[in-house]
Length: 391
Image: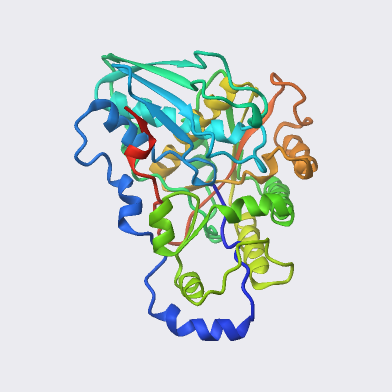
């Protein structure tokens, strides 16, 4: 969900000087119109289920992998599975974050069906939950959604196509008011799992900012986790339009650098290089400018992970309504070995106790910074609807 500037440049100022004229005449950082057409809604779609899925594919998900397979072969039913080619074995070896993305998809699907007067009877894991390790996953369904007539639209649906994830520095001059945080958290479920919490208290912000920055450095300095992001980086309009997923980079400087061949995506950027410094600066800026934090906690069963995704996207929709940005800082919650001390620290800071040992133990499922972006936040690319469907 937050990965940028993992490019290794060589030659420093000489390259920058060579690129400057090209950068000056390049277009802005927005993406090709066809790559973001999903954000216009289900244009031309008349089938009720396809229309609902067209809204659901805008759901937030790790690394923008869009790891969903939607089966429409059974009448009156939508069955959701995981695309096992679209997972993150290095940073998410247990598949927890991938399933949070499935929960976000399900919630938008339910909202979109309700908007059309259809209620959703959601059954999770009709053939049993996926195994604990990502490497053991198979094709069993995540959820089976049976459509029933008679649901009322929800006001949060109006924010679905306006929702953005702001991967930018927030405005340090604009604090988030406690009352706004209270209104945001009030939109989360009042009982059951997960539970929402948050803070804008200066005394707590510094420790959480430090956690985000320190854990981001671990991901950036661990070659296999860094390479996982590099392999999913799409540079310039042609790559973005070809893939419509992953980490899209389309600023004038980066497009010009790509045109001149100054990229090496075969290895992590060397410490001290321009690419390394750029990646570090970006993560440090995101961490330092967090003006508050919101989190979701609960159990850690597969059903809990789906529930966390459903609650998370509702919080982000409410944040959109309130005019505040909400951006996951997921590094400290990643479950690879090098991250273990920060995973422990995250649970201490949020829950006041150690990291979970069993599925029923209290778990921090999401940790997000909040604040006000200083400019427009663009929509991110989405794959065509037809590429996700089994029909």
